[in-house]
Image (cartoon, rainbow, N blue to C red; front, side, top):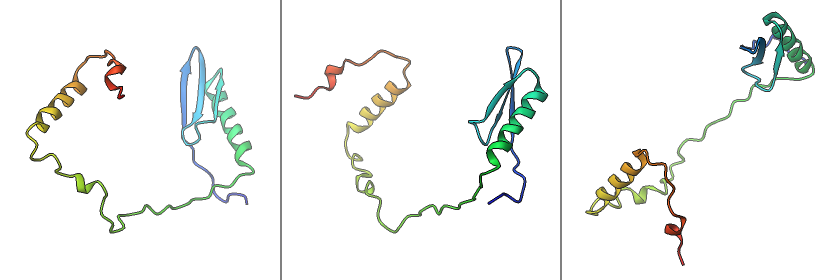
Amino acid sequence: MPQTENLRVNILLENKNDRVIASALELPSYRVEAATRELALKTLEQLLATHLKNTEIVPVEIKVSQATGEENPWIKFAGFFKDDPYFAQIAEAIRAERESNDDSEVDPSMYMVE
């Protein structure tokens, strides 16, 4: 079924090595390269028109599911370590490790369980 309205497309133009690359932001697989800005735009417009000539764009609305009233299965673990005197130390050590700039690898044998 042919479309009754025009499709508005945003075109990204990039200058690279004395060439112009044009791509459609909404349809990123469509990309052309040309010697001039005008030629890149015209070529991309023709490419899109040819492809979209026999296609149909159908808007679809998808309902995002909300909480169904079921309890989150992870909620039973909330506060599990609240009375553990070592948990704050462990959490701080983990946080410090994440924030460190140390890019060394951990010896895989540290994780081997026999």
